[in-house]
Image 1 (tube, each protein chain N blue to C red):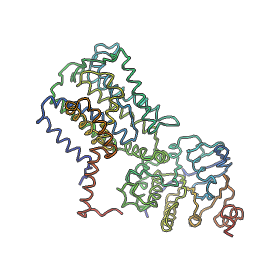
Image 2 (cartoon, helix red, strand yellow):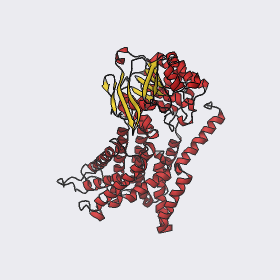
Image 3 (cartoon, each protein chain N blue to C red):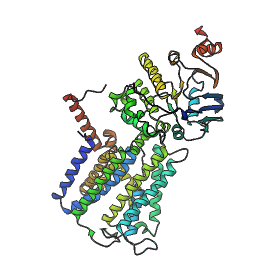
Length: 253
Length: 340
């Protein structure tokens, strides 16, 4: 496997720090006083039932929503209220839950656009070129096909490759294995492994599939009713009584 | 081997046809085609904006009209305070710069800010703007009001409105054809550039493009500016051949016309849009004699049918058809493995 990027470690300190983050939709506290941080080269999963505020958390970090209160700092700078593209260019790039690609463009053009979007950061990261990334996600043969014609799983991988083409510092993956077959999920775990090993990119992953979370083998934070109620290893979380009762449900025994 | 796109093949075929055309038609018809080529430049400016950038402007004649009036004012020696200046070159420059600036201003207003205009809303506001600008032109005594500016000089090659005049219809025909070809080549280059490809991704999925790091507002504004400047160039070239600028060039009617040419020809390629403009104008001059006042009715009917049956436009469908044909032939000859 080709190396995706080699980067000096100097630029990867300090990182994402969230303090007292709150988002109200009408009377609903979608995200409620969340404190959270992620360091360089760290990966973390956020799990929690539907409607617990995971995706809203992502929307706040990427600038899609403005928080009601609290702060989000990235690399020491406040990112709240900055336009979407500026937050992306500072290095926080997101993969959406439903694959979000450019359906009318070819697979190659999709990656090219992402490659062009990264602005002036890392201008000579030749290893991030579309050709190399297509090999990594095994879509080289589909390069000239319209991206809208890909299978669901292939679209997910294409979007992942697009996110990486921007040379991000922190990737936010919203259910990267959603709607995938078992074989595709295994492949996705392999991909994330390769990507993490070679780019040292930090990752925040929302996921529902417990098998997938376990396979990722990273620390887990559990979100409920807009709050982060517990954090720790996957095994700790599985054995945490509060988490089991509220999230996994009493039927799991 | 370099692979030509199907649109380029159609463009080359059309170019050969138009190169040969003056040999078989009267100079009267050739003179008409000189103007159709200018309309085609106008259509290219809208096809780039609508087809490539995904921004529907229902008032694109505003920029055509600004170009036409700017050219007229300069070549008629009407620049306030500079009565001696009547350079065609300055007129062309003024047309391109003023229409481009107007488009940049409008673009900044429409696409900047927290809630950029999109889709139908953008269309309606651009349409309203065209109506407003048309009223302004009608009420401006400086611009000749309802009558417009008459006796606009033809194209003169001297630095200040002197020197040889280009009035020979065959020369004009080839000059305008050359300009059209140059504009199409330029726009194809732009569409294939980093800017053009980024713009296409904003058209396809603006949120995705922005969350990858594209400044969508800036890209759209630049597209609007470029398209406006090109429309201004076509307006200037038009008025130098047609001889007078009137409010009808700046308002709603021509805006609707150009939209129909582009839709009928095919908005997804600048080449099909250009051919659409030339074809519709030619048919209009042929058929309006025969069916007279029924022409707008006929054109409207054709437009509705086209939108329903050939959404890619007549030449756009033809390009898609050539594409399929070539793909099938390649697959049949087995030179390329079918993509999984």
